[in-house]
Amino acid sequence: METVNTSQQTLAFIHDKSPILDSICNDLTDLGFEILCRSEHIGDGIMQLSALKSLPTVCIIDLDFCDKNVLAELQELHTKYPSMKLIAFSDKDSERAVKPLLEIGFAGYLLIGSDADDFKKAIEGVSNDGRYFSVGVAKIAQEYFGKD
Image 1 (cartoon, helix red, strand yellow):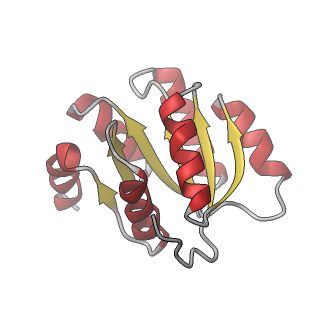
Image 2: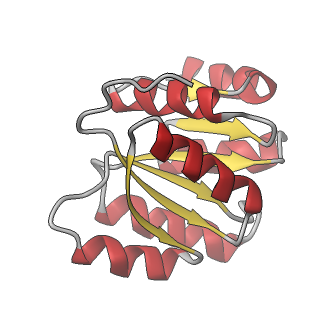
């Protein structure tokens, strides 16, 4: 993997002990991204974010997105830090899993199987006020954003 200029592309991760994301974090660090915080729970993540001098550009989240409590906490996270771009990482590709995240304000959604290059593309895309969705959920996102 080649190192790229990732200035001002800082990251936070909220995930429930995913060895896949541990590996992705290492790969992204090798690519030059700076990981400012990592937590296992949204509440802990909010506390860590509040202690930072500057917010990460992007927060990548891998949790149970069908859990209503998780969705409420994600809404709180987005409300407190609206400038931070949110990217979901999940094995769920159903409308039931994806649509609530789009309604909260997620700018990206990566499916399990995405590699560091996919993460890099997603991070760069959402950092530039774009969106990025894995092929398996792109149609759901297109339909959702097409209604605007």
